[in-house]
Amino acid sequence: MKMITAIIKPFKLDDVREAVADIGIQGITVTEVKGFGRQRGHTELYRGAEYVVDFLPKAKVELAVSDDIVEQVVEAIGNVARTGKIGDGKIFVTNLEQVVRIRTGETGSEAV
Image (cartoon, rainbow, N blue to C red; front, side, top):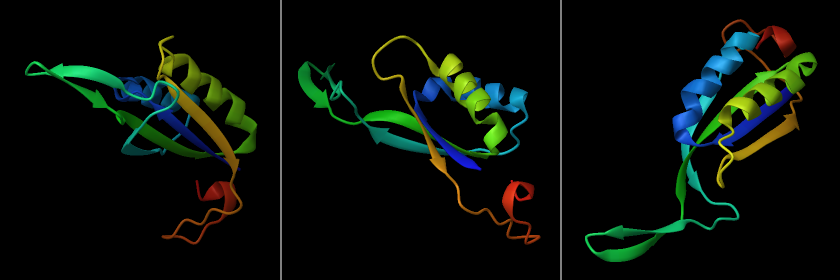
């Protein structure tokens, strides 16, 4: 099993949710986060004063998936979250050693 973590622009969240639901993913976790990458934020004008916005709002989407659909999920997220502009985000895939469903005690892919 793998844990897929995607950091995306917040307005792309609904598109990502629909794309992974179409694949058959039943559960995702979403967290509102702030951060920056190479762009290092940007400057904005507020009431005539210029200030630097260091941390940009992002959405962090986490999904636990079986090994056989990892590439399909990564491709779906990448396709719908891509705008072609700086700050589109990243997708991380990590190994998931164990999953346990608390209610039933099921483990592994049955727990997802």
